[in-house]
Image (cartoon, rainbow, N blue to C red; front, side, top):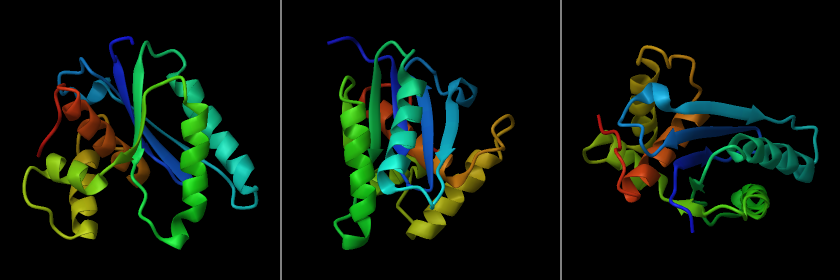
Length: 165
């Protein structure tokens, strides 16, 4: 297996999927990260939405030497069924790459915050405010910020530099 060159964090959603690509040699320089998101229309079928999202992600990682892809873990409720379809579709499309579909977002946020976790909404707000206050990366949406938190956690698990505030 090739040595991993990049981590790709995904905040999968049928409406707006956030993505962040971090090279493992980024040295903590946020400007080395690539942030992106892909939106789909609610009028599209679930499979069409999944296809658009998976093809977009595939196109983004195609030119990377050896990416490791990760997505936020699902909670086990019935309301997550459609999101589960998206997770499965993306996992199948990305089968040529290491893919971790179970990144624990609360652990990833705790790593980023560097302290005990406040309530979920407060944690998301603190992280979003911090990320959007950085010069050069002010145009991020909440999905891209969550994707960064996931990629940051994955980088830490692979022994690379990870951010903490």
